Image (cartoon, rainbow, N blue to C red; front, side, top):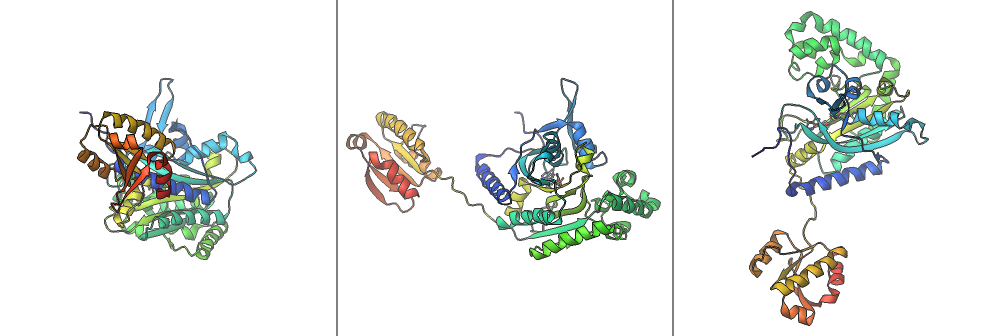
Length: 422
Ligand code: HAM
């Protein structure tokens, strides 16, 4: 037997209805905020991610599914959605559109070669949004408000929103210098990744999972003290908007995010529900003012976030929230002999074309077995077709909820059902 690849999962019919419900709701909310869908390819030129996400990040260094195609090009299965969306914005010259900022959402599989753990997969589905072409604290607040709106609309309560500003590129370079000075003398006390980070991206030492409790991490200089006036003012305005919207947040000065493209606003939503597991991050995002130029695009800026549907579903489970969806059958037609089976097949075809969710038996079950099958499919109504029913063109429509039986003409079955179901 060939098994499924590690870190991936089959979504069986028992769970795909939950997924559909979640996906529809996410789309609906994104549309309320006037974001429109974009679909980009699942694979891209590797350089998009080495340049866009950053050569010093874990994603690029350790986690990418990269291969050489038959044309000798280096190709990578997308590990995230921002760089591809920005590439598309640049390539399709969306900066020339009048309706800036361009507000986009996307949903689809991402691929990272990570250690498998609860809530961490090698193929996972991200839902993300990007607003590109405006630098306005109000849009940062809009994006954060949308994230919270999404989680709350599913009924989640045990949420924590952390925000930070990692400043503009000038503030960051001053801050990085201060961090190098702070960590360098004792860097051999840190993990091997951090020993590299000190040269490639010192800020990442601050959110290293292994060294989180190190005394020097706790006593490290704070980014806020290195923000220049513009960066400080931008952050203050984002916070003001969030306050006005009544959104609770905590400033976490160690929140630096794991991708290189961020500037100014960075944020994460965590779940503190018991039983959610060790990986508590539900979603992450932030502003990326240098990314477009880094990818040879125009001098435009963007902000966005991404969440994985897998972790959203885990959070629902951890808070005991059940998804309600109606995947029950409207009508099950049981048949008593070959002639009625033939009649049933034609009737089904008509009912389905009229929008009734209907089915019948294909396993030559006895009547009792057919009724059990109707129960398994949670049919709302059933009819039994036999010689008499076809001759008289009348059936007993049974309401499976209250057991009530109603004699009706076969010719009015569709209308009767539609009325009862509406
Ligand atoms: P990220 O923090 O790398 O950011 O990922 C965003 C979210 O994707 C995480 O918070 C988590 O919900 C989910 N996620 C990441 N890796 C996995 C995994 N292995 N298994 C399950 N879920 C996972 C980004 O990807 C940025 N592109 C977000 C962004 C959009 N920033 C600006 N715009």
